Length: 196
Ligand code: HEM
Image (tube, rainbow, N blue to C red; front, side, top):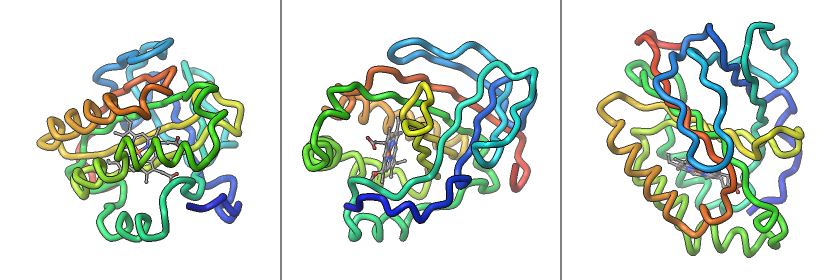
């Protein structure tokens, strides 16, 4: 567990822009809990959180990469061994799942949040079962004053879509998800080039 040392530069993040243009074509936007996001036909991912967003965009969601809060150094090492990079050839499916947790969650002490996250909900242990098929990146948005606390991003091959569905279903049944008050599930696909 780490308290976050601020070593990750502020611009190590991304802005997800929903609109008409972008390499990722929208298949579906599902409001899982709380208000959904307006329908768009494409999503672009712009590096950093301070870039200018195209005027024609419908929404823009920003998030920064932070150090892990709940995972132990051993867990992080295990994760690093198996987690693949984003942008793999053939991984033409993606999910952008922005999530906001309730004030009940944020009011809990860190050790209790950790207990819910891993000891009781097995978030990492469950997630690890789906690696390296699924590549992931977590962005934190809460400190940026954004409408969501987290932007979660996943990439996988079309043949791994059913497995990803199972993963999402399992996580949504955990105690951790009792604290999710807003969740939108944006499913995307792109043409198969090596990198977007
Ligand atoms: C693909 C397998 C997955 C793995 C290996 C994984 C692993 C992790 C790890 C290591 C963290 C960071 C914990 C920390 O700060 O120490 C995390 C956080 C998070 N993940 Fe996952 N995850 C996976 C899938 C998912 C999915 C499918 C979702 C959404 C449906 C999701 C939503 C989140 C959220 C919202 C957080 C932030 C939790 C918080 O800080 O309160 N994860 N995950």
